[in-house]
Structure formats: C-alpha cells, structure tokens
Length: 163
Image 1 (tube, rainbow, N blue to C red):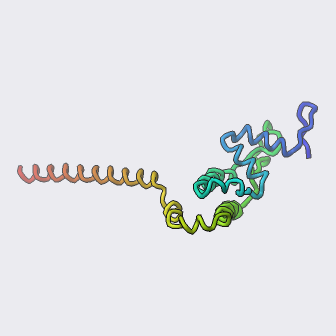
Image 2 (cartoon, rainbow, N blue to C red):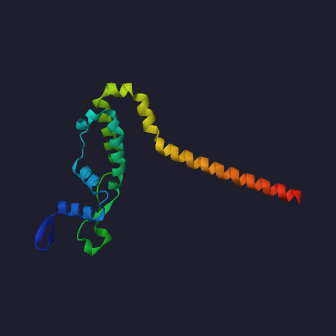
C-alpha cells in the first residue's frame, strides 16, 4: 500500500516512519529500533561485562512509551482520530519478554561473572541509590518540618495556658 504525495509514491512503512519523526521526535530512534528488530542481539555488548546490563535494561524502560504512542496512519491533514494507529503493535507482556530476554542473554553470556557478582546484581536490581537518597532527603525534610510545627504548636499551647 502506498500513499501518493505530490505525484510521488511513498511506501506505507516509510510514510509511517516519517509520521513518527514528525509526531514523536523524542522517541523516534528507540521506537524504530524496536519496530525493526524483533530480537536485539546483546552478544557484541558482552565485552563491556555486567556494567552494561543496567544500561540495557534502562534503555528498554525508556523505550516502553513506544508501546502506547500513536501516529496518523494516513494523511495527517485529515485529522480523523480513526486514522491513528499504535507505533508498536505489541502487548506489555511481549515488550517485557524482550527485556527479560536481554537480561537472560547477559547472564547466559557470562555465567561465572554473574555468579561472582550476584549479590551486587541483586542490590543493583532493587536499589537505585540516587532515588533512595532523594526519597530519604524528602523524608528528612518532612520530619524536620513536622518537628518545627510541633514545637511551634507546643509554644502556642504554653502561651495559652500561661494567660
């Protein structure tokens, strides 16, 4: 199926990629990679060791919006909502399966390294130190604010009792 534009014929897949460029430029590179490659081979990345695994997982996390984005399937000037389609026709489960396959390839590619560093990997999987630090700081600030408020209320109570 082709779309005609100024007497030129643009193949439908190219037209959809162009629409993606136009409507979602911040996601275009990741979405096109995911659309074009059902399986991402991680073997070339194994020489960086396990330090690349969190980057690969984070890349998939940043690519997740590709499963919900929509673009115009036909001429966008028509602006009919019926003409919108999802960029990536893939369920959340299928997308998560891709991410798990990536992690599995890393583990399978360097099993001894994984065994040596398994405790570090477990901590890294559950702890994002920067996020924990931010939450801790907000919690501390909230506690200090609460303590100041309690102190202020206690002073007011003492003043009212003294009158």
